[in-house]
Amino acid sequence: MKHLAPGPLMIDIAGARLTDLDRERLCHPLVGGVILFTRNYENPVQLVALTAEIHALRTPLLIAVDHEGGRVQRFRDGFTRLPAMAALGCLWDSQPAAAIEAAHQVGYVLAAELRSCGVDYSFTPVLDLDYGPSRVIGDRAFHRLPEAVVALAGALVSGLRAGGMGSCGKHFPGHGYVIPDSHVDLPVDDRSLEAMQEDLIPYREIDLDAVMAAHVIYDCMDCNTAVFSNKWIDYLRNNIRFEGVVFTDDLSMQGAGVVGGMLNRVDTAYRAGCDMLVVCNAPDAVGEVLADWHPQVDPARGKRVAALVPKQPARDWPALQSEPLYQAALETIARLMA
Image (cartoon, rainbow, N blue to C red; front, side):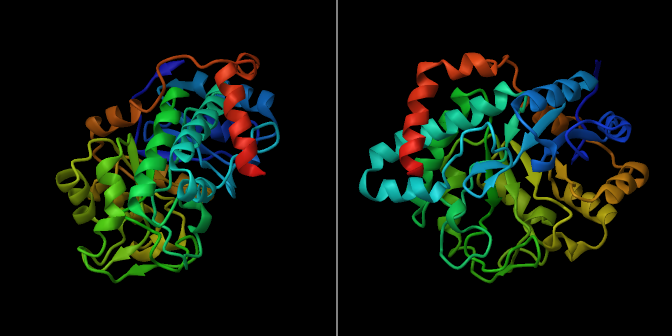
């Protein structure tokens, strides 16, 4: 195993086992993380072997996944099926204290199961307010009210930390108001900055380790999406006083096309102030970036990313299954899913 400071790229791999090309790319100095998908998963035993091989290549290297619960949960068979966050919001309407406790337990199970299989990090919680018509957010959001989102997402974050994992609030500064899906379209939010202040409350009030910027144009701030906007990143750093990691959303999404091809996307996002640039489901584009992008890498950004890699060993899967706190949390989740 070699020590190599994290680079600014997070890339993906082809399948359930590493190929020679995967190994070569993961050892590239511009790479600092890998994001896993359903195609990379067969069962917990296979996942443990895969993450162990990845971690053996270099350190630190952040292994991440989109594992929110509901319809965004990459690993299912063998893992606890987690509720959509809207289920916690529904419970909050009638039993807020019970909902807060349940959110903590969901975060704990989410983190503890992933960590027991060698996964370091999940891109959660979703902090977008549920305005209703969004084609991509929907029940991924906790609630329409920012105070409910702060209470529930804050409890989920505390559960993640109890399970040995950091947090990532998304999609900054808010994706819940616009209707289009930025995976396939370029949404534009035409509200004033004053009107957006509700969306920003969770970012101000929750102690987050990272945020993920949105592929949405906000007319009040910039003609570029938040991912490519130094104005929005400056606002996050200097107005909200956020000191953690800033991730891009996937730069292969349609909403990222506003600045052109992949080389321009990674360069523009990095110059805007994003720390980790996510490029996935585009292997040819990854190859192009690794070969032809020559940034002046900021070591301080790499240190921020390295801080997300857990320092303490996780419980293994059998030990986790017999833990009383874990078993109690499973009972709560079963009631939410009923």
